[in-house]
Length: 171
Ligand SMILES: CC(C)(COP(=O)(O)OP(=O)(O)OC[C@H]1O[C@@H](n2cnc3c(N)ncnc32)[C@H](O)[C@@H]1OP(=O)(O)O)[C@@H](O)C(=O)NCCC(=O)NCCS
Image (cartoon, rainbow, N blue to C red):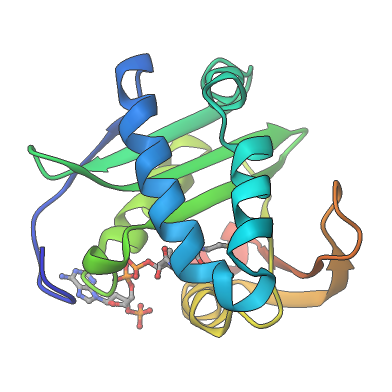
């Protein structure tokens, strides 16, 4: 799938069979996004910690959570997961393979997450301050920057918290 070309994707709930392709997608997209910030070796360590088969299996079956993939029919090109805590929903991951970015896949995944949690009063996420592509994407979808924080498991990794109130977007 060439950069920016629009290929229809079907966004659906992930199953156990999807987890190996999802791991491949996450490996490729993590290196593309974060090698310049953390170095390839640290990225491998983060992948091993966050995206092992065991970790993803736990995420898939976590209560009050959604785990969705964007499927072209021949490959999985994007993944999103979110978990509800009270009426707030944390977007845990939103990753689109580099060759499929800029073609509406991220937006389709985000819209599916919004749809799955239609009673949420807040959606929030953490993003690296130097990940401008993602920050700009979230800002265009209505997320507002709420200030600096750091990664819960790795305090040396800085983050920006962003929040969206769906009632405000609905006007
Ligand atoms: C950030 C990221 C998830 C965004 O996903 P994406 O698929 O590249 O973004 P999209 O193509 O859906 O959206 C980008 C723009 O293209 C537009 N677009 C382009 N072609 C489109 C199409 N065919 N259909 C719909 N929208 C289209 C979208 O409307 C959107 O415009 P807007 O932002 O002005 O509303 C993705 O770039 C990514 O995975 N980045 C690397 C990983 C990362 O940083 N993840 C976030 C970690 S917190």
